[in-house]
Amino acid sequence: MAGTRARVRIGGDLGFRLLTGGFAVLVIVIVIGIGFELWRQSQLSIQKFGFGFWATKTWDPVSGDFGALPFIWGTLYSSILALLISTPVALGIAIFLSELAPNWLKQPLGFLTELLAAIPSIVYGLWGIFVLVPWVRTLQLHMPALLKATPFFSGPPLGVGMLSAALILAVMVIPFSSSVAREVLKAVPVAQREAAYALGATQWEAIRAALFYARTGIIGAVMLGFGRALGETMAVTMLIGNNPQISWSLNAPQYTMAAVLANEFTEASDELYLHALIEIGLVLFIITLFVNVLSRLLIWSMARSMSPKARRVVAAPASEAA
Amino acid sequence: MTRDAQRRLLSLAVTSFCGLSVVIALVPLAMILFFVLSQGLGSLNLDFFTHMPLPVGEAGGGMANAIAGSLIVTGLGALFAIPVGLLAGIYAAEFAGSRLASAVRFAADTLNGVPSIVIGVFVYGLVVLPIKQFTAVAGGVALGIMMVPIIARTTEELLLLVPGGLREGALALGATRGRAIFTVVLPAAFPGIVTGIMLALARIAGETAPLLFTAFNNRFWSTRLDQPIATLTVQVYTYAISPYEDWHRQAWAGALVLVSLVLSCSVLARVATRRLERMQVGR
Image 1 (cartoon, rainbow over the protein chains, first blue to last red):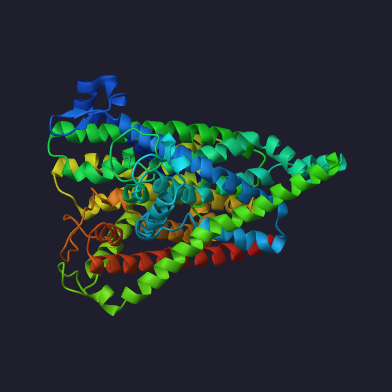
Image 2: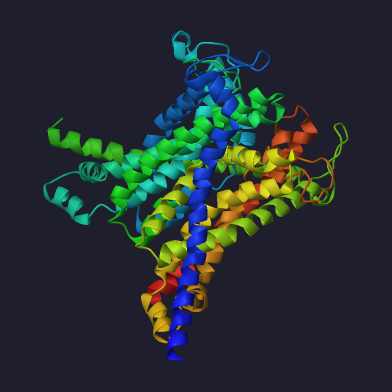
């Protein structure tokens, strides 16, 4: 009797472990499956163009000649510009909310900045088209001639283009970088700051010491924002101008990998065209995977000393505005 | 200026910039909310929820089909994602030390970072291409894949917050591990998990990119799962990039509905989370 009971118990435990473990494996299978399926569905393009796909400029669906370079360029350029704009602001927010703000302000301000992550991408795009783009056009019209002479502001003032896209991207990634950076800063031992103050440091010098202590996590936070910017689709598609050209000019309409997928996927008329588009998806997947894994490793190396709540925020930044 | 005064001035400058950066981030938030409210309120009426879209040139009409479609596709996504995310999260929490648990955590974080448009391409190859048909189910699968990592990680973290004594008590009374989880530990963490799922749903309901070539769009009333279906987000996109004034108004109304949905869920979730935290502190 006791023997059967024990066997039921062990059977029950094993069944529980297998059931939950099976679904756990499924999550891993999905991630691997995405890579495999994209690779499998882009075979025509991979075999025809090889690695040249990453490095050639032509995108000609009519003659069946495809290269992804302008899209890779547009994706990287817009994301890096967005980071240049957003990083100082995101770090400023993180420092203000973890070190400077009075306690009663911390929670509501943190909640408000994280609301930026809750607004759907399509709403950013809508606001961008009808509000931001006209403003950017006015700015471009009144730009001093000296600036216009530089390669960064050459070309007609269209409004849509790299500048509008980079600005909207910057706003969109701020909450991701700032919420992780904030938790990383919180994980810095108080003794660090106290030691700095004891040595006569000013507030900024103490913060700088904390920033230095948390540098791996901070870099991870910025890279996480970079990963978000790389894959952002709707708002960028609506603002960047959708013209596959490689240009340093912020006035120039350009194109990103995500945007070309959104625009041309349902119009792919022949198989090679479709496979070329799916290969762009594969390239985007590989680049974001690389950036994300790197940022996770950096953050995780800091996360060991964090509280469970901090780890939750770091694991799914801004997925809960709590 | 003495070196000391310089240092203090620099400190003041940097700390002021930090305060200013919060304002810099909140300005676009306020402006977006202002425009969505002012433009959306004027166009939002009962017709928006109950009428079908009208052809170009006819004023009025609504997005009844797209609202129904969004509910269906998001519901399908939840149907796929909740069991997977919940059970995978339970595994990650209960067998926290195992190698598979670390692998799941890593996979979930990775999946969370995969661009939504790439998930759309993946589901296109997996579901749409074999049957050569855009379907509501394909849209649901795409949204479901996006929800899985959020639900899994929320479940895991909340289960780990449940005091160990509860689990040990159940085990000491002779419950199997599965029984201890499903009848004691999970119910204790349940309110938090439901909050997390609600928030994931609200966020996912605002997604457009993964639906563009899975659920596609539909000009007609359709609730069939094996047919293309309209969704609020894709409809807002279609209207926003159209050249027609009247469609732009509809797009702003749609944006207002989306934003109110997401914001009210975020606020509710925050209230619920704070109550949970206070309960845990008070214990």
